[in-house]
Image 1 (spheres, rainbow, N blue to C red):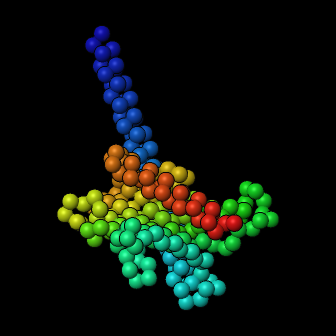
Image 2: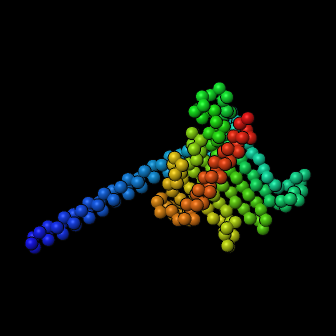
Image 3: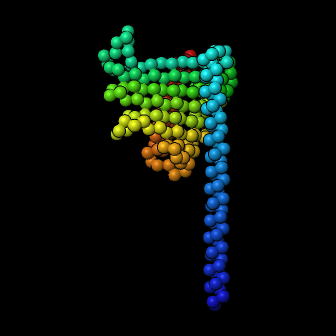
Length: 211
């Protein structure tokens, strides 16, 4: 009977060891997968910014560019309705929509041509925010950088970096720390809001400039 109990205990220990091993192995694979995806996103971001910079010198090699502004000054005077508030949106996009392209082709959808969107806000009490959204060659959102002092009690700029893969949040970087799995409710909500805003701006661009 004693031998039976010892054997049962040994089997239980071995099962726990194997479970722990496989769980750790799965976590390691997930971490490596995220690192690979983040590295690819950084390459996309670097290549996009490099082409934008090149386009400032030679428009033939850069992206097309569009911008629109809400508020700010009109005839050098602040608008009465919005005071000194100004919101500026800048869009860099790759090529022109092709009306003869196949329905499923990215060239047929102006939103899929967007590669980068930046939005900046300057409002009352000298509050500021800035957001940069990056898109891959398929027009899918892969990265958002946000900087704002609007929600900060001591007016300190809060910076966050959001990494996405196939519409899913895979990493948040904040205050020099990376979070890949256990996202806080606040960060997860902010990521959803940033993705929603980026997609809405894509659609705004398609509506305004895709006609």
